[in-house]
Length: 391
Image (cartoon, rainbow, N blue to C red; front, side, top):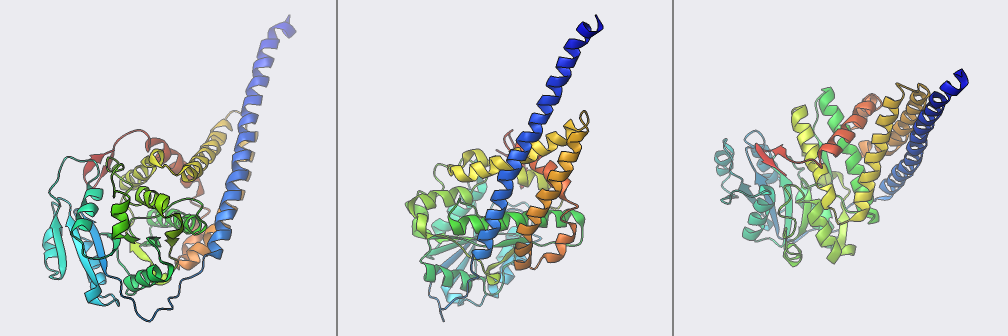
């Protein structure tokens, strides 16, 4: 009788073990594909040449467009770095579109007499930043639009390098490097390391034309091409995406004229989030664009990264019942971290951020958790951005 009564329990136990072992096998499969992808990105990053201009002078007329909302702490530094450019001053204009700021942003910009200041009048829209950029482009006189964010600083040869690259490559769209400014706090170092990974992937993906990726803090495109593809039409109802969604529209028309500019003279420095709430709102906003990507390759990459991190987290939790799975989790985590370190080291070296790598292994568990949370919440609804609730 005991054998008969124990049979259902034994079958349930076997089924329980099989299900969790299946989780381990799925995680390993995702892990292998993920590692191949990361090593692919590393190989491509190392093949991207550093740009050194062969042109003595450039003649491109540039319009720098800055959408600004409540940036009194940062906008002055950006405008001063723009005024110190080595590029001839008569060949570029600076346009700031004030997006309903409630602080001293407007007054600070007014102090710069050579800056064109426009107030954004329209209200009750979901993407104020796209409307601000669109407004700036409509008022621009330059043939070449360069966008950056109000909390950025740019190097002295920034415009010269972008203009030279455009003229040499005949580029219609350029994605360029961005790096976070960081102090010694663990929070800012964590953000900087995460962002370095994104920058390395961006350079590799764009150079190889594997998928589209860029950051609006350092972006350039021809003004006429912006209008040729209808500007932000069709994506103007999405709060974010003034960079990657526009890039995809342009790449459909000019697939061979999209480039990544790898040059230390073109690195834009931007500010990290000041709080965990701001950080998660930023990452959730970025993740919310994923379902709108018509580029299936970037969507596939994002899905792989999310599922792999989710499976690792599930493996960790499942180890509470089958302790053997913890060994699998630890082994996969060590190899994952090693592969990612191999990828990120040359990227950190390019951005002169090698010292941050001392904490790279330490942040791995936190990175897995944040990817899962941000990816999930990114599909779930509204986020806060610049004091507004947006979708």
